[in-house]
Length: 304
Image (cartoon, rainbow, N blue to C red):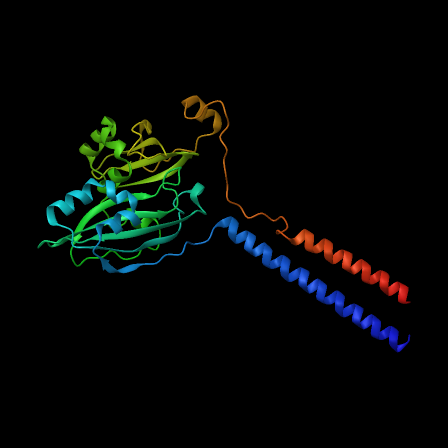
């Protein structure tokens, strides 16, 4: 084999090696980006530590606060001494299976009194992610706390609503329709509430479990449609009493139809999964690389 032939084969090998490296790197990076885009990424958030003295800025940044009777009553009674916000939680709504990979974010809004008052108002406000089956954001609960108190940033969605919090207050804040249901009200008035939680019943519906505070052998559960209960007062479909420790299984399609919670059309059930299909751009790049390799081989054979 001549020196020219050896040199030609060497250059040919180097070109092929670089092409294969380029294809491998590009494809792997594209696939990783595609996977991250499918599962969702944590939202960015900026905490506002300075006190803002403009009430209109509060209304503009957090629109639902403009319609809050609690905020209005607080500022009317104690004046408006400014407001500030801090990050309450940002991450994923992992409370329920169907929300498993959806990014969410919450803020704590602190509203200060202008007059001599030892309390301030704290508002939990959802800034990203669907609390209902729509994209609506808004107030989750409000509470007066000591003027020097601040809630720490939560490490999970659960900490925003359950541990160390007012179960009954937040239960009614999130499910105001429960106040208008005699069975639920009688249960809570008779046995109290030691806690509550939710489980998936069917896409668009949840089981809401209410745990008694006093000694009682049953828990209460009701089927609730995921909707904005401040505007829709028919979310509760039925109420049942079940044994302690018992949980109802998710409904299948025929059961949902029999209960009338879905019609004749099959609902579209969307899931967030990472697909193993080739990443965008992988096929075109592979095709171009294949053409280039074929031309190089053809040129090599002609030179021989």
